Length: 360
Length: 230
Image (cartoon, rainbow over all chains, first blue to last red; front, side, top):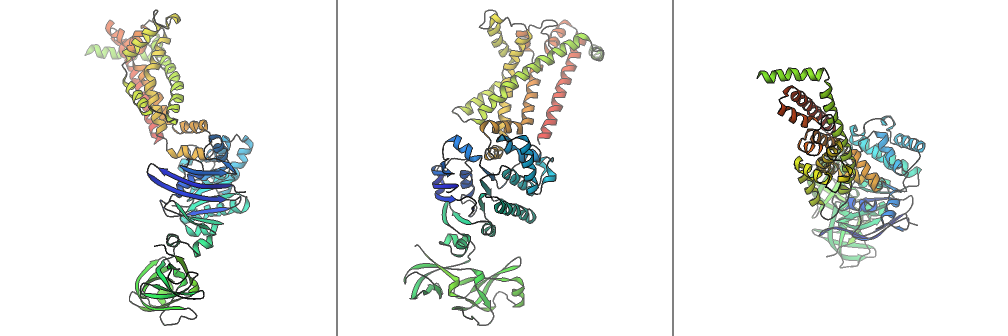
């Protein structure tokens, strides 16, 4: 039985459609990560699930009770969930009172409040801050207090809206540590939004990709990241090589995909003549100075067009009739003496290519 | 010039010797205005909350009307209260005319629009995320309202102080419905008005200084609250 079920949910403000036909369910103990670019409607969906706003269309069921409209049902459901906002605020009181306030509103006994609030503060590593004025906390500390405030009520459903956005790496790891602990130790369902795909992949059982208010794909993290079903999802999950083409030849599972400036061999279920996209992750492509493709079916000679250094990694664009992006370590780039204009060979296996239908 | 100087010297003598008449008038002014403020606060905080937390047709018109009433002339309020509590008025049977109660009623009517408007502004000034977070944490409508009022407490205190300042310094209303009766309804502003006409300058100046001191204390308190709020 799903703890949360959403059916045909839609949200619009005046003429602007924010969310369209959202359907999803969340089981007890399940962690759902909603990913999507900024402005895709993630926070709107989060607020609908937290019952802060009412939807324009569709229904929300919490523990199989329809909580779309009736205010008493909504309050009862809301008291079984808690939200940590992207930029949480603290109330004008001390840290302890900020954490305890949700319990007081639920009429919990005083002794129990003290025990639970102290435990929650301890969990987020803020036990020594109990008597501090909450308004004097830093961004990372405020986020931890917001998390403690949400956890102290022992919710059935924890909602996390970009819980680590705009935080320093130390605060991010502390928050993630607490979230991981809570997920493991308690049978709590978590619905989180994030633009950090690694975080989404690591913490969740299920991932949904929301783009322009539509849930374009939902599934296990590996499916989303390795087998996107649309160009938009592929772009969002970081597949830099998206080649538009047509199936030119079919030999069993093996297909020749004609792309602008060449042809590549891929494994595909599509028939000859179908319009497709060939998706290749940059990390699945090997770059070498001599022609040595090994067992790879696709080997192309080309010239380096562009080199972009991103920390310890280097993104290299190679023109081999069509542009392909390759990722190397900065050390390898130096060792191989790669500069713009260097002649190189790139190779990748037919199985490294994901072929999806292209709707014209 | 010497008249003013002599007046000032004698006024300070009256203040520092705790002259019974000066103290009695000042004390009466303080308690009447304090009572008006307490009653107005008890009305304006709940009423302001109801207006702020509910959306209804004509809300912005209502708020505009309340703000317009901030500059209501004291004599107009005095006349209104007089008509209601005079012997032939609808509340004449209570015998309230020319009593401290009459002044309190008038002052409550006078300062309520100011305090109500400021309470609404104070609640409006609280970050919307406070309400949203409270609701998200499971607060009922009443619990949310109480939290938001607490968050706006410094701004609400400012409203209270402003109301007190207006009440203690008004003269027209107290004269009309209080009657400026010696040792009964005589307040600082009405006493200043009367004693100046009688030529009793030193008493007027002494009371004037006390009134200015009260205004100064009010301003300092307001300033401190605003700093705390910031």
